Image (cartoon, rainbow, N blue to C red; front, side, top):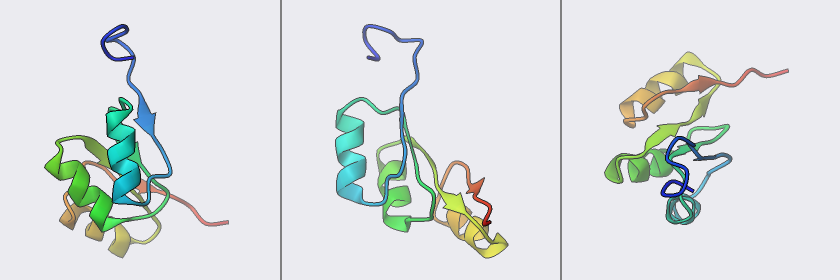
Length: 79
């Protein structure tokens, strides 16, 4: 998509494993996200210079996401 439509940004959600992250990037994903914090995925994204947005519920998880070098952290509420 990126070459034909450079104005479109494509993301991959629900990424919990590095092999999935790798397949998503090869398929053209511009960023990765998940509903939980998966440090190995955050590290993979940092190594490949791709934006990663893991989910977090507690302040401790938000801090862990920052320490793992995530670009952002999304707060996922519980119900």
